[in-house]
Length: 333
Image (cartoon, rainbow, N blue to C red; front, side):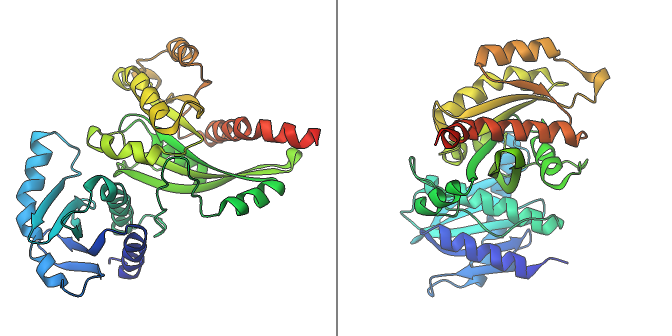
């Protein structure tokens, strides 16, 4: 049973944060409407629903020709409107309708977030309907104004956007689930574009709390275009590779370069070698991981999403690195 109330709440948020949208529809593969949000009275959802059958061959072609992981996407221009189709899991499509002149690059980052959240709702996984406004470079958007942030920091509460980067299937989402919920989920659910979660780290001896807004970035190549926008104003993050897959290790330098380009040179990063519990399948040694970390001038540690203590230790270390200068300033005062 699909939770239509959660789908409706999601579409309300999606429509609110993306100004170019005139209508949104979630339909199954047969064109059956499951939820909709219409902002322009000249469009009705039955008209949009009938178009989902048209785009199915296009989605299959994309998956075949570009060897995607199944996250098909397509854009079709009809009359005065532009229709963007994205798969929301294996059984549904998110159809976003904008003005014909709307920028695809402005809408797609939000569309992928909405698709990820819709897929989670269909699977019965926990997710919030909230879609954050993606800030322009140099802006802060963590749900508070700059004045609110100053007041929170005066109370010892610090909020940071952080990212998880790395190839698909290296275990980024599982690390987050372990950190936030304290449990490892063994069934693999690839991230569509990005997944956003929140978590706090408490430092009682320093009288400080760090609030993380964690952006789990999809590693598949088809999301390269939108990742740059997701990286804006990230203050810290983890670059993750799978110790049992050498190619994910070899791609870390590309991830490092992409992250610095999007988030800026001052972003605080850490390197993680994940899945060390799979000892017999290991292809990357600890010494190789340490050498790469030294080359990138970042800390390195190894972990497994099965081990909650090590995962939490890594997040706490990142939190401390982000606040240590501010803590030192407060002590001097």
